[in-house]
Image (cartoon, rainbow, N blue to C red; front, side):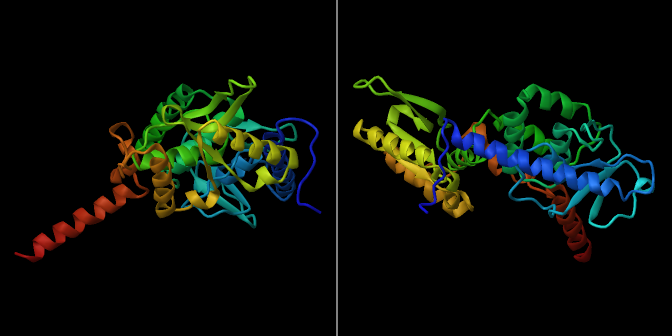
Length: 317
């Protein structure tokens, strides 16, 4: 065994990822259906948060203050909860929308799930999740904005509003993370899905990201890229040819984006290839990436600091 799978058509990676999400969605739908058989009341359970994303075939957040559990259900009041094992109930007294699958399983609408997740996700994860929803359902950013405005009270509203200013269509979760890592350390926003034409053979090679004026291309290399032999060979041939054409091709891996230190090292590698100094902090239009007031529980922290300062001042008299 060489570790490869043969797939006879183009688009192996996107098809593979989509099919994987679809399979997980089907499995979660079956699990939710089986759970409903244990409910003793006629109330409709609205699955939410992680469970809603799984049912809708959307990639889950990587970092969250909300732990992953078998099932999340959102209700509007304490009195509507049921005693079911492995179910975590969340109370949200808001007019959220829901979708109903053909077998009766109900979950929160994906955009409303994004808004509910705001209290548990940092700015980067909110951007990543919004782009995942756009990739899956083709939502426009204006739809997120309008939906957010429809809610009277949202924990994390400012973070949502800031995230939407950074959101743009992307081909993958890792493309989003790569772009945000470059922006975090002050590099300009790269062009995505950029086509480079080979004047000798007329081929156009598409790269994940590029800084054309510097002839620097960035390609994300995940494990699934090596799963399919044809795709892997094409990627390597493309990158070799681009280097022959004078381009610097930087391959980025999941480990390069895992934490801030590794993201800085990656951004420095890109800056070096561009032959420019690494600014080290976001450009003015992207400063929200380091805005302390947008961190999770920032308001609670500010409240505690004010309370402590007031206590210290009183104790001095």
